[in-house]
Length: 179
Image (cartoon, rainbow, N blue to C red; front, top):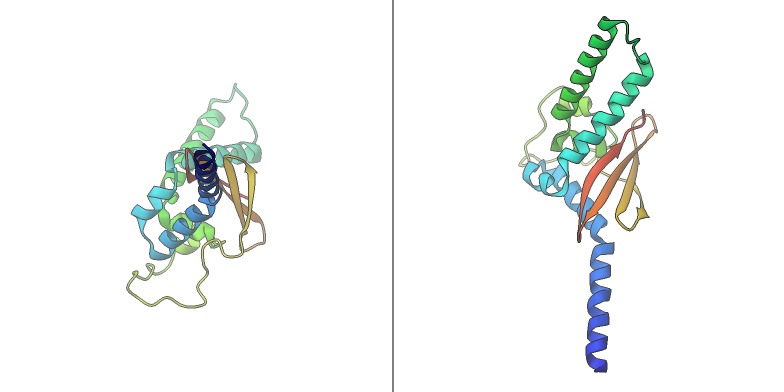
């Protein structure tokens, strides 16, 4: 009987350890996919619908805070805000891609990576001074099913990458932007 009890305890410890290191394994997989510019590998680690929804809400809230709520008796202001929210949604859908996530993880603006010459193919040698995704990130658990990695952008503002647990797996589901 004792042998089975020890075996069950050992299995529970292994399952707990596997789940506890899950976010680190997922961030490593995301980092490797960003370096290799492998969209399929990135898609396995990221909950893109949740991420896009979160970013749309953040940017829409920021836009509303900047311009203020339109007066209901001004149909042009309401129409303009609707168009602006549509543009923000389209921009998020366009920019939340493996390349865009790689740029954010390196602390760069997405359009820095999107502008200029096309990125080198994965066959070409990479510059040793090129930034690495999630380099010098600060990791921490917020709860048993939420884990964060914080990097700083080129202006020193924090960008927080949030992972959520789905069973025994972890996925990137939110990015808190410094707005």
